Length: 296
Image (cartoon, rainbow, N blue to C red):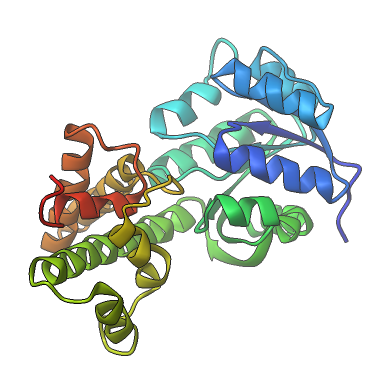
């Protein structure tokens, strides 16, 4: 049973983190503190939820029993769990950190060790969902770390998600998440090429999408991104820059395993090009801007 009296802090309150906080607040949880490198985001959300917006990471730890982190990359994660200076690890004894960022698996392993050294616990809870699911509490979560820690916070995770899967020790959930995003990105880039070629051939793209949906060309990406590619609606739910980063994480894992993944490499090159031409903040569906005739 969920303990809604637990004080929940958030570090990283961009689109995902802020909507997770809003959902927990709606469900009766005590969102006690919010923090973001862009202080205005934290202050605005704190005013909305009626909670603190500490100006230090240590202040979030002091105000919270469980701290959910949603940061952008490895560097940001290492910064908030620094071994010196302002850090979430200050006064962290007894706290639980639930880390939701898509980052290199080894960083999750390192953070778990740092948390344990401070008398705290850490769990990775990698998300495979979008902003809408964060707001509705219908995330899909892949979790890694000590199973006892997972069980301790599972009632909270249940409130945030429609489904969860405990994967294994620290780092393993991040490995799975990297593969999820690698395959998703390949599917997205492939769909952009198929629809782009269909456009160049003068085909009816509504008919083409219908045929795709009934054949081996079907995919979840067709459902979520196909129409957006056609009508050029690239409102950001998962940015092209994030797609490039996550494909890069998967390729690093492949290098470590001694595998060559040409499709993943080609896909990353497309998303790297999105960044290079100034379109990295478009949704991943924006990769269609590189493939449809007359767009790029």
